Amino acid sequence: MFWRFNNMCTTNIDNLLNDEDVTLQRLMDEDDIIQECKSSNRKLVNFLVKSEVLHELVSLVTKEPSTQTAEVVRFKYNNIAAELLSCDIAVINDAIF
Image (cartoon, rainbow, N blue to C red; front, side):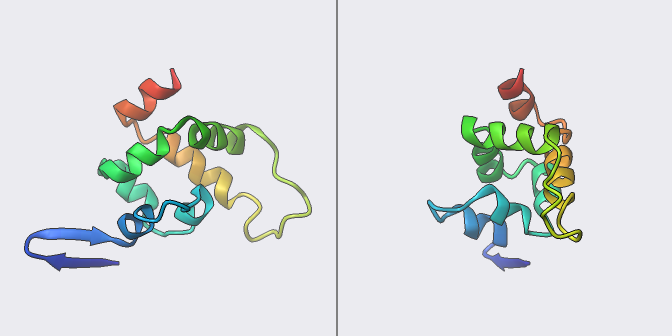
C-alpha cells in the first residue's frame, strides 16, 4: 500500500522496517518487496545487507525446503529470496562478493 504525505511516499515495508524486531520472513510476506528492492528502497536494502539476513537469503536459495512445509508456501520464500538476490543492486552484490 501507498500513502502520500507532502511529496513523501511511505510503504508498508517502510513501516515494518521501523520495527526493530522485523523478520525477513515478515518482509517477504509483503507483495511489493521485490519492486521495493528493485527501486532501491534504502531502508530495505540496508536491512538486506546485514550479514545475518544475507546468510538467511543464501540459505533459502541453496537449501531444499522441508517436505513438512505446506505446499502453498514450500517454495515461496526460496523464490522471493532468489529474486531479491538477483535484483542487481550494487550494495547487495558487494555484500555478497
